[in-house]
Length: 149
Image 1 (cartoon, rainbow, N blue to C red):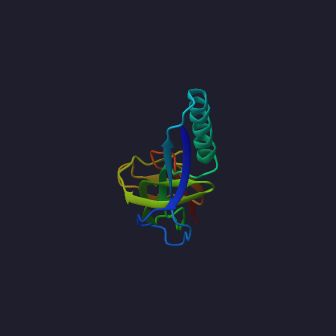
Image 2 (cartoon, rainbow, N blue to C red; image 1 turned 45 degrees about the vertical axis):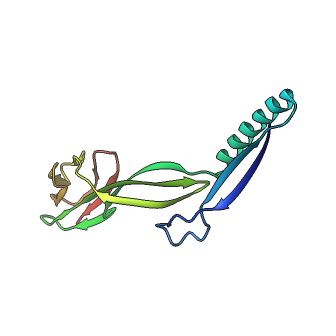
């Protein structure tokens, strides 16, 4: 068995138009050979190549994403604002993440800095209590920095 590997652009739409590189699909075509030992060696070679292509980013690995917005916020003492948590995913290929799709999602909010801010754990509403800086966390571990003046 012999193998031919071909890479060709896909026609699927990209959500990230800033990424000029088209997505690629690796097509693997197996062709029968006369020698069984050659077939066995070629299968090993094909799987080794598939592993190498996967390691250098020829494929796409799904990535889970979480985001708190705004990521940084300044409030006066007594002033309030509501944080928003978004979750979703994207495609990680090489050192780039593309095709990112996020949507707002419910979460549980908390802060260890309760002298600086109060946080409504269900709505994400943050109120400044005293001057200082606090981290406000979404349930997934993502955080916003809140400065109170």
